[in-house]
Image 1 (cartoon, rainbow, N blue to C red):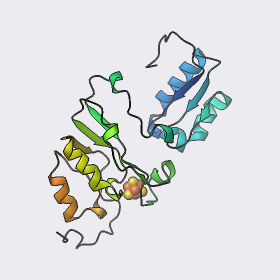
Image 2: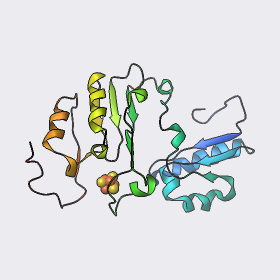
Image 3: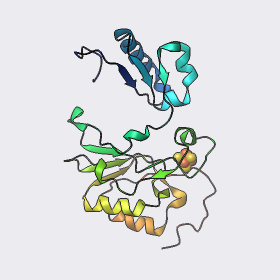
Image 4: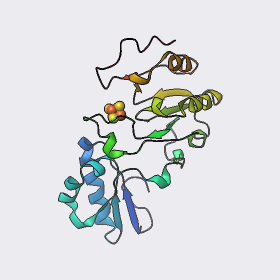
Length: 203
Ligand code: SF4
């Protein structure tokens, strides 16, 4: 179902996701709406806010909800139903989860504690989409990043690395590979000041 309203059936289970912790109010509104409307249904709340701040959720909803923490492994390789958003023209995906680093200020080690990378992302590109947006926390840490970029080139997709590329893993080879892509902007993530001065002299 999509949004508040009549859906024509009584669900047994309601899954609600959540985004960044500061955006908790809309999540509470949705939980309140659906848990009041379908009093017999299980209500399972997951996502970033639910994983990082379960106590904050329980304070309000106590026994009415169940909390799911972390990534749902069963849907990692499923193509989202983009027909629900016909005006959206880009496929969003993670080619990897987690991160090889453990920065003390970052929530990724809590949200996705294990670093896992896919060998291929072809199955996650929606037919007709001409652009891919990577939400990887650390794309260049994947042992398959070159394979993934080859696929992107073959599919002639525009590319957006939304989360930034790890500056510590950026080399002359990386720059050469990226140069071949349709990529209007490159974001770099500088998560430490300890980057060697000669890092970029390998090309
Ligand atoms: S490198 Fe980035 S994603 Fe990885 S732990 Fe550090 S801040 Fe988080």
